[in-house]
Length: 403
Image (cartoon, rainbow, N blue to C red; front, side, top):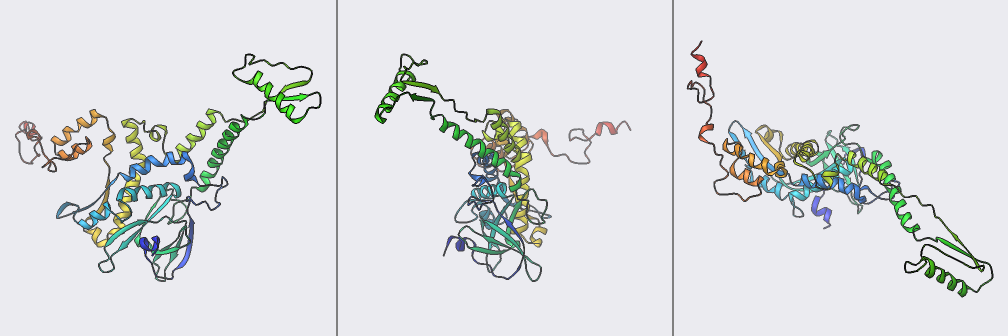
């Protein structure tokens, strides 16, 4: 059994092909004129890595919220599925892989393997496909056919595919391919890198040309050239900076003209990559402040967290189960990047029962304590009860006497 058979198994069916989508990947199928793939670029990896790691740190949770109350992790099987989706990786690694695929392709896929008897989800695998086809079954049901690097392919019903997408514009199923937007940028980067490499190589080209006015043997030419270098070009020479030759030879300096990209050109190109991937220099080099991280999280990470939650909920639970309040949420303690003053200020949230002591300790990178999962409340922040007019519960009992 191969790795793909182990991960995905086999899906039966003979649907009709409707649409084909080619993925960007690390194989390189000639889609790009720079003879490589975008993930091989150090700039692209630097832009993608902070987002992928932040999405990997999101905590997936199963909650049930209905008329019977709110329950956290009511199903232990779903809880374990989110933490350990398959034998090959943890939930963190699955989320990071999906995030990288989403950035490279504007599409990311994961297959849900279900129990044959109960139809309950038991494993989730990312699908690193080279190409994806959308197909329609005889009853109007939708399928996806994935083509892999080793030439194998897999057919799966769309209801079992967790599908993340961005730049969702032209097609009703797939996000727009970023190829056209990145081709020019990658060409510029390649040109700049090649210019730097050539400049380094050309730094070792011939700088002086000795023209001898008489016929010499090859070994004599080499000997005279070495003497000229040692006497006038060596840093140990007493006459460095000046040269003198007799009538036997003419010395002429050669000035190679080499294009070297300047710092401003490279900076502008890098900024264009940052703009495309919605990041900046501070995020890439982990020099961000509390406000900068919060802005990055709300504009870049949170939309993906919401999409993950919606897609996992739709594909793991049936409509009936969702109607009974079952859902998947992906939480992030974005306050772990906050300043110490902000973290200490959350003490008021603990006093008012908005945070449990253990939730606050987690933000402070401290271990949980016994009994810390129960909310607490100071006596002077008691719950407001209607009908009391003593003026101590937030009502306006004092004003009523004047009417």
